Image (cartoon, helix red, strand yellow):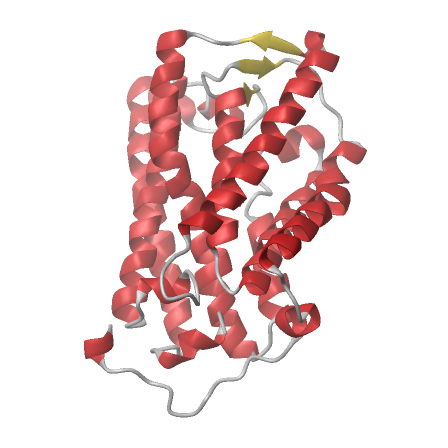
Length: 314
């Protein structure tokens, strides 16, 4: 249903190609303020600088704000593409329900937020030498404002492009569910390849990124909507940004703690994919009474003939 409902609107695949290009352009435009700010401060010294070095140029809160700004532009691009290029109600890229289920968003957010807070506290208590207290009241307050307002936009933009827009587009193209599930997961993971975490920990961390995309895709298809994925992704990134930072992460923030350890890629990199995510899936399946796993994850997508709506319905 979630994929098939996009067939009611303008869903020629060329529209998804053009739409993706427009969204990329919007995101690039959103990156210009960060580029200009870094160039203003360092000039041509930034030529040849690594991503980690660029992240150190500006104040961390300003740096975070400008980085997240590109996702605001990207989110606007998605909305305009869906509404005007596909002539599709934005809700239909979000869910099959009559209205967006905010309780589901809250459940996904709370589940990962509690898990992240508990495991961070446990790791801090077990390995105190791996952390330093980074808390500064004024800087942390500014961080909270920026993060609470903009991190959900960042995570929502990623969810709408991968679990919403492209999931529907590739699903209508392939007329099945497994192809868009796998392809969007690999694209999502692949776009994290240039993160500083990959440089630090090695390519094995791509298992985590691709596995996370797969998990978010599964809960979207099983639940016939993105609400759980929207909440989960927002909770994961927001709580992470506020609790812990490190010199080798994509977002370096004025968080409560700073990880000063020298991490290595071990089993903990794939632990979420092989153990934690399956447990989350079982919890969600129990709460929302999911059934027909095979049909919903690898089954065909039925596209009824003559399923069109008038402009007045949009």
